Image (cartoon, rainbow over the protein chains, first blue to last red):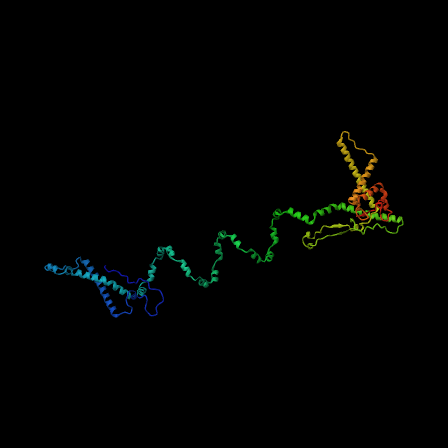
Length: 329
Length: 175
C-alpha cells in the first residue's frame, strides 16, 4: 500500500473545560487542521469531490492490483512493432513507455494521485466526523473495559517512577489544609476510632526509650506545677495508715542516726539531771528526814529547857532568818 | 509537810489523746518548803551534837585510815620485822584532836561547814552571814576541840549560841 497514513489529529484528547456559549466547539477538528469553520460551500464541495475521487481511485487501484496478481498477466502487451523505431526516435522515452504499456502507466498515475490525495481527503473526512460521539454510539466501551486486564496494566506500570515524577511538595503547597481541616468533622472521626486497638498497637516502650526525659524535665516548671496542686486534697485522699503499714521500719531505723537522736533527746530532757535526782533521791530522803527530825528535836529540847527555866518568851534564834541565807558580804 | 511542785513546760501537748506519752508527767523536782521555813535560824543543840558526832566519826575514820596507811608503809619498808604499830592512848588522842582542829578550821573557812554540818543541814557563819575567816575559824576550831562541851550552852542561850559562838561571834544556822 502506498497510502501514507496521516494522523488527522483525532487522537488528541479534547481540551477539558466549560463549554463555550457561542456554540462553536473548541475541539472541532476543522479548526485543528486549518479548515475554516465558517464553511464555504464551494470549497467544501470541491474537497468532498476530491475525497470521493481519491477514495474511488484507491478502491480501483486496489481492485486492479488484486486482479494483476491473480492473472499473472494483468494487461495485454501493446505491440509497437512496425512503428517502434520511428516512435522511439520521435517521442520522448517516458511517453514511449506509456504508449507501450498504457495499463501500467494508468495504474501508476492513479497510485500517485491516490498517494497525494488520500491523506488530505482522509484528514478532511475525519475532521468532519464527531469521533467521540461515534465512539460513544458505536463502540461497546463496557465490553472493551471488561476485556481489559487491569491487573496486567497495573503490573506494567512503574509505580516508583510515577511517584518519583510526582512533586509532592508542590501538591502540598497547593493544598489548603485549613479549609480541609475546617470541613472535617472530628467528632465523627474520633467516634469511629478504636482507641484501645490503636493503643494496643503502639509500642510505648520504644517511644519512651526514644524520649529524652532529662530534656523534658528540664523544660518543666515544677514550681509552677506544684503550686497548682492542691496538696491538702491529695493528702486527704491518701490512706496513710496503709502506707505506714507498708513501711519497713527496720530499714528506716537502720538508716537513722539513732545515736545522734538519742543524744539530742538526752540533752533535751536533761537526763543527767534526772539521774542525779533519781540516784540521790534515796540518800537525800534519808538526809532530809534526819534534818527534819533534828529540827523538830531542837524545838522540842528548847521547849523543855525553856519550860524548866520558866521562860515564857521565845528565843531570838530567828534573828538571822530575815537575812539572805548563805549570802556573802 | 513537804509540798511537791510540778514544773511543766509551756508547750505541753493536749491531754486526752490516744497516745499515753503525751500525758507523761514532766520530771518533778521536790522542793522542801518546810526546810525553807527554818533556813537561817540558829540550830539547836540536838542537831549540832549530831553534827559533831558525825565529825568525830569522820575524824576517827580518818585516823584509822592514816593508821592503815602508816602500817602498810612500815610493812613495805621492813616486811620481815613488821608489826602493827601500837601507839599509846595519849599520842593518839593528841593526834586525833589535832586532826579534828585542822578539819574544823579548813572546812569552816573553805566551805562553811564540816561534813557533819552538811549532813545535818547546818552552816557556820559570822555575824555578817559570811563564812568564817581563817583566823576566826582556827580560834573557833581550837575552842571546839579543847572545850567541846561548850556546845551545850546552846540549851540555855537565848540565841542558841554556844560558848565558842559567843567568843568568836559566830553562828550555826540551818542551811
